[in-house]
Length: 319
Image 1: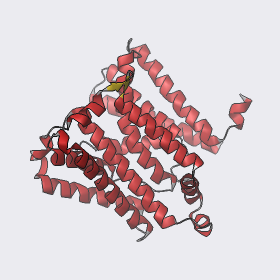
Image 2: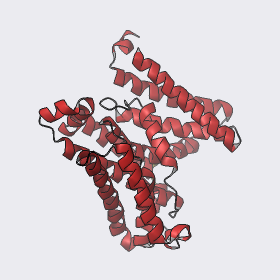
Image 3: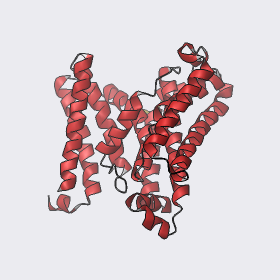
């Protein structure tokens, strides 16, 4: 108990997020026997990986006091670029994947440039970019009647979303790799130290020689990359792209970051907690579905539980 009290607040919040995920799993088992079955847990973790990937990029920008509201349509655009470029053909999969990821990086970099160079508030810049990307996608595809969007994902992408290696789903393995890389990048590299420094005190970071503009652009580009990557995986999971498929991931990605213990004002937090937050949110949705609640009751319960978790974190920060 004494060791827990002496832990850094950021480390405690990671443990809180993990505890919340475990508690929700146990609640799911209580209301629906078999909830903790291997197939059920695997399915939940695979779905959580999509949230976790988007939240990885969101974590980067929130750590510097920013936010990325463009992820819904960057994700959507990544999915549509993949299907319309590949047309479901394996031979075109590599160029389609590169094109989708490059699109995400470019859009993210534009967001970062708007924030860092032109001084546009992150909320305004990224929300405007979300609208621009939505308009471009709807215009180029002919609106919600987009026929090319129904092209199937290439077999490789579908396999990535559905196949397993040594009994572990490939999508989950990919997310585990991302968890390791992001955690290492934030904790043991100059890049990570610069990110935290920029989030804690931008002026002091600049005086210390950190390229604040370059870092901001890089971090927003990373957010775009992860949103597009999630879009690619979602296409593989569902078989094809659909307009509006990224909408649910805006709120959940931000909620996962905050529930995971990252300070919304920047400078503090770990991606391990964010990953646990993504799992918690996914388990929560599964539990509410298992209870067979009407849609409106489920939405209210979802919001109330998340609000309760955030209020609990707020009280913990004050102490």
